[in-house]
Length: 150
Image 1 (cartoon, one colour):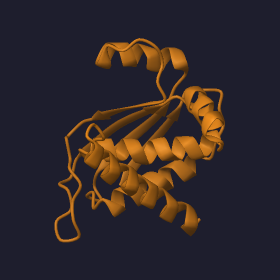
Image 2 (cartoon, rainbow, N blue to C red):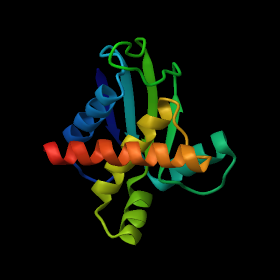
Image 3 (cartoon, rainbow, N blue to C red):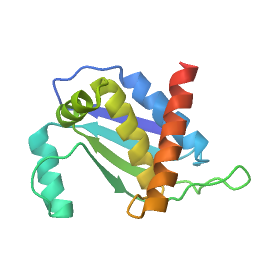
Image 4 (spheres, rainbow, N blue to C red):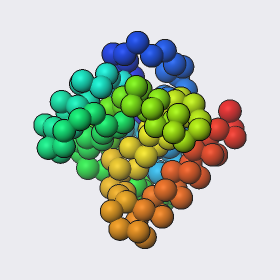
């Protein structure tokens, strides 16, 4: 698995941790070991442009996901096909605001956003209550297992 990190912000963080979490999450979801993922950290102005361009919603958001090969979560006997999972764009500044409201660090918030986005790239959504419960339970489980293993 290849995970590329691009940080265009003033925020400093352990990029290796984000790579490790991405690989951990993709392995848990049985994504092919020959798949690629890009994670870009941007400023509010940049994510606001993307937010308008792709979702027609003004203003910045904390994270956006852009699937490429539309891979779906696999299983132990049938991993996903090889391909590009997609791109994740995270805005640390907005994540920090959300983290302050939630009472945890912005790094923890960005790690959560990363898992959340990988699940989106694999076809999970949270529009309906049952989908939301399944997705949020899964992202919590993956993140807790990753953090416990550190």
